[in-house]
Image (cartoon, rainbow, N blue to C red):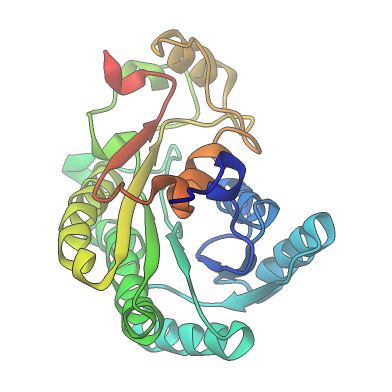
Length: 270
């Protein structure tokens, strides 16, 4: 019996990846990583021009096909239409990355005892309902008919452990993210159930839970957060989500399903 080489295991040539919320930040980084590994990439955003701009940059950098689509993942009609549009453009969807998400971290962000229901509902709808809707329609329209697929949900360490609010002392970040934590905890739990159910259709489902990544945040927050991480720093955009996403998307993880992989410098290992 001949087995693939390590290089071949990580090769995504000939595959199509759909990355929701792939126009910026970690979403763009992950979409770029998948294209660098050989995949063609579809990117969604609520803002079509942002999705198209991100896709054009990925196509230019990698030489692989990339296209942008508009979608508000809170709307089932929009999700269904987006999946149909991606299938019309690419013919299939092998990999789904449920990255589209929302978090409000501003001085106006109200704490638990003052939080408007509208803020709770918006975050839950984007982060949790959006993951459900995108998975539902990609599985039904693409992966189940094909008899294979990979779904990667994006959780957060906020869905695993409580936050140390001393990190926010003296910063411009206020309030609480109780709805964000609840939604990401739900995504992590949903990943396990999805993995168990979809295994019969040869569809693997895993989750990545990032810690904080550096994006020019308040200096006090960066210092205080980093002091609490075993590796003594925040994650690096453009680099430290690439390995995990390609691993879980590729045949390198062919016997891995139902896991939650923290990418957090050891934060949740304390």
